[in-house]
Image 1: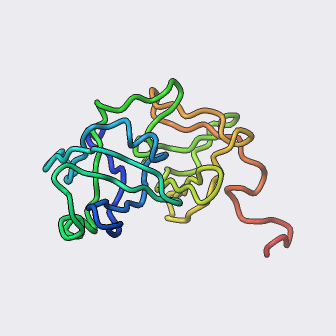
Image 2 (image 1 turned 180 degrees about the vertical axis):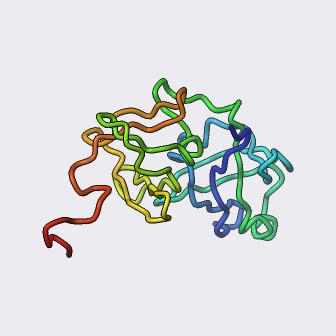
Image 3 (image 1 turned 60 degrees about the horizontal axis):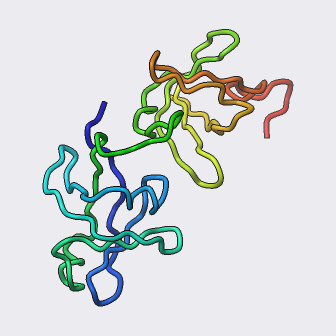
Length: 176
């Protein structure tokens, strides 16, 4: 398991006081505000104090220790910020998306393995898993209750109950 997880990326500056606008890669600005420091490297390098987080449209604005003007904030644009897994407090039954990557997606009824999770995105109200099979073909899988039966991190798998055709090509001339 990764000790440090990607949380956000600085995309621009905001205002004259040195705020940094970030694209959130974690659940929310509220989740990010639970941390007192961020790291500027995947191994926990270059920690920086996190003073304040506030939501801004679909992003967040960060006030960071030692960053008090637009010039200092501009130097951080493009930086990926990480959080320490050990400092995160997740509610029971919740997990990090990074922990899903590479897990096999298994039919809960038949045991058939459809592939492994290659990526997790959230383009709308729910997560979408990109499941890559052994041939490299990808299927977008909506991670919603009717289809997603269990994320079993202990046994390293994701149990699903797909509808017919979800992981196979359309049959009987039903191709789009």
